[in-house]
Structures are given as C-alpha cells and as structure tokens.
Image (cartoon, rainbow, N blue to C red; front, side):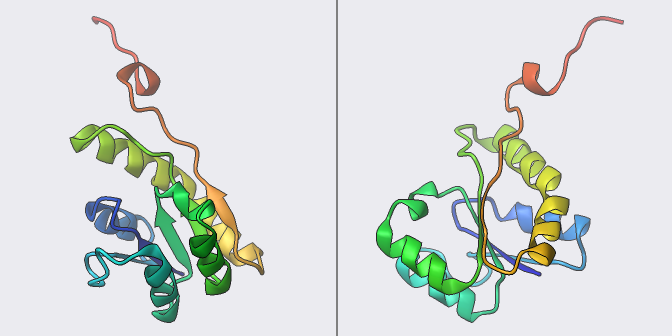
Amino acid sequence: MRCFIDENLHTQLVDILQALSPATEFSHAHHEQLSGYDDEDLIPEVARRGFDVLITDDRRQMVNLEELAALQRSGMHWVSLVKVNVFGMHGLGATTATLVAALPHLLDIHQEEQVPQRIRLKGRGRERSQVLTHRPL
C-alpha cells in the first residue's frame, strides 16, 4: 500500500509511520514536489503516481464538488483526520497518535474493500487530562 500525506500534515509523519509499517510506503507532498498544488490538480497527480491512500486534514475536499469528483475518479481511499488546532509537539503528538492507532485498521480496509473508501479518523486526546492523569507518589 502506498500512502500520500498531504502538505497540511507534518513531514515527520512519514518517518514515524514508515518505522511502524515498513511494508507500507509513505510519502509527503513536500517529498513528491507537490506542495502548493490546487487539490483539483493534486488528486489526479497523486493517483497517477500510484498512491492508494490520500491522508489529509482538509475536509473541504468532501464538500467542494470538483475535488470530490476528482477523488471519486482517482480510485484512492480518502483518509481525513480531525483538524488539530494545536501546534508544535502537542499537535504532532495528537496527529501521530491518531494515525498510529488507525494504521492497522487502514491496512485491513485496504485489503478488504474493493471500492475506494471515505475514512474519517476520530481524533485522539490533545489535552493533558485526555491522555494521562498524574498525582504525587
């Protein structure tokens, strides 16, 4: 399976996900020299390059009729993350946790489904209280 990570997600996701699933190829828009493309042009180009999955946090692709049509023609699965309005390590951590938790299921869906799927990932906790508790020893 080949997964394309959209430019609106961090480039470091490639190395993290690749380490967890060596049999899956991950590439980022930046590495493919596809940063700055309009989605209507990007989607067919990503499909032409042989990617099976588009990972993004751009949910507008489902409401923009031209982008949606391009996705439907592409034959790729569309994976959307919940937009994380947290930056730096906290934002990367939340995005990474969501993708890592979903990765085995994405691999299963890719094997099981014959038609491209619209997949929305549920976000992992971003606030400290959502991911851990702590108290003095």
